[in-house]
Image (cartoon, rainbow, N blue to C red; front, side, top):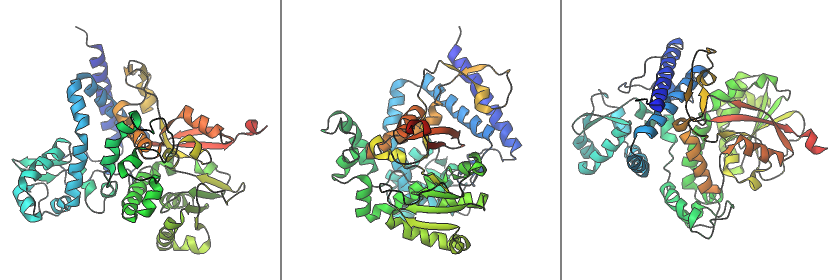
Length: 446
């Protein structure tokens, strides 16, 4: 009996994993090991940029694994997995909030693990509650149960140790679960179900506020730091690829303006790679004070020489920097807003890919860029399935918070056309984002 789809996916996965192994060896990376007591270089995209072939081999592997799961997992099990996945996030939050993660990291023999009863005694907790929480984390690959009811950190969970990127990339901020719970009712039953206003979303329902999300954050400063940390790490994840994969040397404009540039991480990386450039970081007034302090500490010479400037700017006001000497960057901002509010800004952001029928064949060599025409075509979704789950989930997240979304290329084209711009190029990154290069639409201005 032929198992055509299963056979194609198995062959595709084997090919992707073989390529992954080869590219890791070529890059002189250590083998992957979940039991390792240290992070692997591939675990931190803010610090290590894989080769294009390695990035695509990993993405294709994840796509195949996701399609295999969709093919063989019972639908009811799949639904239960999704329904209860929020408990995985809440369980990790518990280990971070209690500092259990840091405690396990500081053990003299961190791979050995310790009994949950000892953890409960140390932190004044109930072991009968702690064991299910730790086992939930273990089932999702975040910790290891080394023996019955004893637990240790694994390689992946080290990203949550204090000082690491995952500690700051905390999606389950206060109120997050309430927004998730409010989303279905907002879309189907509320008085706002047909509204596209950023002031009429699941966020307002969950937080019982008339304020838009960012206005609410400004009035609740306790939420500002975790949000700023989350946004900073989200940006840092794509910074190495933005610097490496966009042809900055072709820019004819000597001054880069990062609109909504936060703490200045992106322009700092660009200046490091291209010292001849000048840069300006623009952000809201309450952010600029922090950014100025950070830049004075980290790049004092650039600040003193005027190579780097920090200035207050409201994205919804007229841009004070006008002229052919400027190139403008806007990263992870447009997805916050529906089209009407976003129609005056430039772009580094995610580009969603429509999920065409997964029976469509796509050339593996186009993913891995190895130039070998002997590879057959395999059956994978155009959007890479599981490898694109974050982009699509983030789109629903932006929808629920601000009536925003992650846009497809066609939607980006429609948006920028309404601003008198046209897309001149799209640069795929070794990250979830892309660089969408726009310029004035000369034809549209005639």
